[in-house]
Amino acid sequence: MFDARNISLRYGKHLAVDDVSISVGEGECVVILGANGAGKSSLLRGISRMAPIDPAGRITLRGADLGAVPAHRIVEEGIALVPEGRGVFTEMTVEDNLWLGSNPKRARADNETRRGEILALFPRLAERRKQRVGTMSGGEQQMVAIARALMSNPDLLFLDEPSLGLAPIVVKELFATLTRIKESGVSMLLVEQNVTSSLALADRGYVLEAGRITSEGTARELSSSSVVMEAFLGH
Amino acid sequence: MLSSTLIVGLVLGGTYALLALGLTIQYGVARIMNLAYGELVIAGAFFTMLMVTQAGLNPLVALILALPLGYGFSWLLYTVVLHPLARRSKSQGQLEVDSILVTFGLLFLMQGLYQVNFGGNFQGYQWLQNPVNILGTKIAGGRVIGLVFAVLIGALLYLAMIKTRWGVNMRAVASRPQFAALVGIDMRKEARMAFATGGALAAAGGAILSMYQTFTAVDGTFLTMKALVIVIMGGVGNLIGALLSGIIIGLVEAGVSVAIDPGLTLAATYAIFLVVLLWRPRGLFST
Image (cartoon, one colour):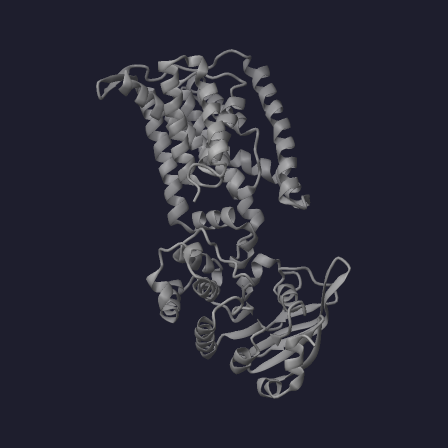
């Protein structure tokens, strides 16, 4: 359903992502693994149009070309991004953040039903609807970010290191929630350093090293590959 | 005497609060420091005066008309002059410097136009001068109605900011502009709308001001300064802060004017401003 071909992205002279091609199938969960500085976040920002990519790159969603779509229209096209650092509005309440998530027209029709479903998925947020997001724990803020993304009724969810900085028990809870979201039929593209948890969740994965894809395969193949562990450790 | 000071202070404070709301929306959301803001307030006052004296309209009708006119004028101003600045500026700092310079020039242009057309004298019209009795204090009817409308418009705006998608989007941009695209907000459209909304409030504030006091072609400068002081006191982008600070400044001005000397009101405003800057530079109501 989602296809990104020949993506390159640079910061000045530094080539952060070097001619990368990836795809996500319908209902599939794909993970991009790699060490710090491998270019994972840059790649995700590039293919979600939040950062400019080289003109040779092609991004399509269900055949529709996203190359000229401005950043704020991407969520209307059906891709919701949960960025690194979560990108939540910390001065505002949980409720306001969720409301903002339902901004796109594609989300308006059954907004209320969806909100109910999402709050059922995140019971802690249901209890804290009126709380300011800035006063919540890191794990809860991550939940707000994911819930907000789901409010846009996405076909495809991009998640940039959702487990970063969270305690192991919270990470476990997070991946359990992501599994439930995957089961609900939303396709996912996940950038992670947590190899074990993300390969348990994903169907397929890519390994990114110094801006290039060095291996790819099914989650099972990658789990048993020594290359993955090396890439992850940055050797 | 105390209650009359209080009421005069509240009327003044209510108008200031409305003016500060407009400026804080323009600065907080559109990131434009609009030094010609007071000139639009004065435009609202002149417009109301003309509608009353030339067209024989009720000032309240003029107030209702001033809202869309102020919105439309500011919308055009943003589209034609400020948007190109916003588009080419590489950083927030550059946009601030550029917008300060451009609106500073605009201030003189507008003041010049007012002076050519109306001269430098005090302007105004007579409306509801008959006093009404409130808590034993006699106060001109125009002032009371002015306060009622300032509070009404301020309250409606506040409710819209809290309860509508329009307002929630605006608050989101004010607090974290870099995340706006994540929730499908078009920053350009949002900035233009916020700038225009601020303009509508400025024009309405001018219409209300003209209901109970005279003004001159060059009063805009002081109004911009006062609104700016109130915005910083309340914390940039903080609507409730702007409302409360506006009322505080109004009460202080009325108090100083009665207890010490009317010539010291501006000095008192800046004295408070200095204390706030030294003591709570992020505003009285920052958390």
